[in-house]
Amino acid sequence: MKTIAILFVAACGVALAGAPEGKTVFEAKCQACHGPNGEGKAAIAKMFKVEMRPLGSKEIQAMTDAELKSVITKGHGKMKPVTGVSEKQVEDVIAFVRTLKQ
Ligand code: HEC
Image (cartoon, rainbow, N blue to C red; front, side, top):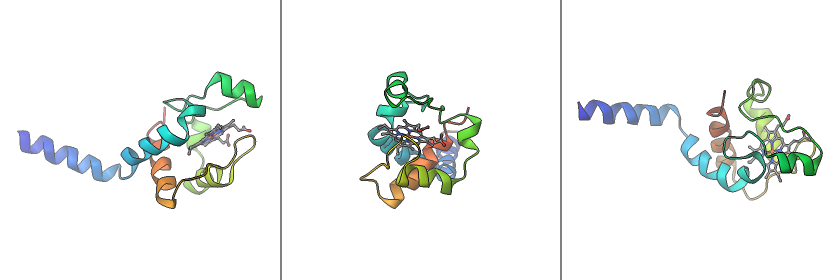
């Protein structure tokens, strides 16, 4: 029984490749503005005078990985490009954003 559980966890880990690392990147680089679950922080939205769409929302989830990557590396609207992230970290954080889907 125990072996099956371990195999199951291992298989899930492969399916969600990048997401656990992405969570660390998210916590370091996105959470301050977007909140722990990507819901968006009211104070930040007010400061930038924008409406922050929850990252798990249909609208954001409908964006392609390439579009999300562009938001992160080139910025979008009031959001400045996120600096200090490697190509791999950007991919990982996108994988994490996908897990926020509501
Ligand atoms: C300094 C605050 C800040 C940080 C840090 C930040 N964001 Fe944002 N983000 C914003 C704001 C403000 C908006 C809304 C921009 C607008 O609509 O003009 C936004 C918008 C977005 C959007 C939606 C774009 C759209 O089309 O509506 C995505 C996706 C996003 N951020 C992802 C991320 C990710 C992933 C990270 C971390 C790698 C991150 N952001 C870091 C402030 C931030």
